[in-house]
Length: 519
Ligand SMILES: [Zn+2]
Figure (spheres, rainbow, N blue to C red):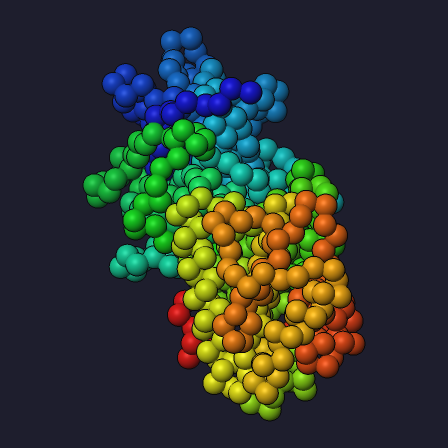
């Protein structure tokens, strides 16, 4: 398949039924700008648009000189358009495409556009499918519409606003439509390059990063609210831009004013509908080491990865802190408990430090991303270690890095200070029993396949994993359990907790970690 070339695109605000005027405006600008396509937000048509307008569009004299896309706004569609669509499909007249309540299209210039039309009505949104008549006269969107559209696209436009779009923004707070959760969830899932909504005023948010995906892949999103077409108060109602393909040739640097996504931390009320996606078993969100073993095949992408924040199935209540390049989450089935820890640390305190980018090994990241990610992983490690230290404990930190792994992470487990001096012997002896010897060193540059431990004494042990080596994924946990004398807790599945217990542990962790939290 050929990749697209950069395309100039025009987006205009809601025309409130002034169809002909809006299309003439677009055609006029097109003469000098040569756009590849245009988008009309909000109500290009309304229910009351006279049928004479539709007749005029269909007459041979009227020409739409470039593809123009629009959806259902808040004011519905005239009968003349819905009946035309029922018979002839989405092309109302040559080059004018109605995307309905829910539409996904590939443009002639091979970009993808997703559109969610209509308004948000909580009752109708959740209505069982059998009660819902799928018709062209629908005025509000349904949960299945959001699910259908939840796949990567270049441009997303919706009639409704996402909620909390100003989260993480450093711009002065604006009085904007409050929006709704499903559209925010949709934006988080689509990761569009551009996201437009019709707006009473012009609003341009700083670009934000869809943090769950590798930064190099061009995951910056830009959000715009466009004011009504030819409004009387002089607000900007048209926006032109160049849309670049998401290929390495066109990837730009992350803009300096880029923020974290306003949508990332929201629970996403979706079950992913696309058949291409691998859905993990519902009972095993963030697991500890075993994620590697169970998901070798098929290849796990960010959507199905236990450690990717974009995976709608991950347990958000286990997340303890989110930085720019990495985050911390409590594991399912922690090795330690309040009873195995010293009295000063009356909760499990076992935590994972996870790069936000979906990568099986740190050395597979680009140089800049590697540097920033490793720096932040250490920052988290040092912060947690300090928290342990001030509570009469030390940290054992270990990592398995493998090119064919899923999503690399660091396990951080507290041990009482009284046991710290024994750690080196235990790791050395257990390695010997397993038939290998550790090297006392840190990583070489671009080292890919290895097991690494940071000991309380500051020593670092590395074992290079050879291609066919059957390395015990529980090795780090097994040795730490031995040091602590709790070998009955090696298998994390036997340590699983109720969600209530997990929530309490997460709260405890966060409150103890607060003085050390730099995020
Ligand atoms: Zn991942």
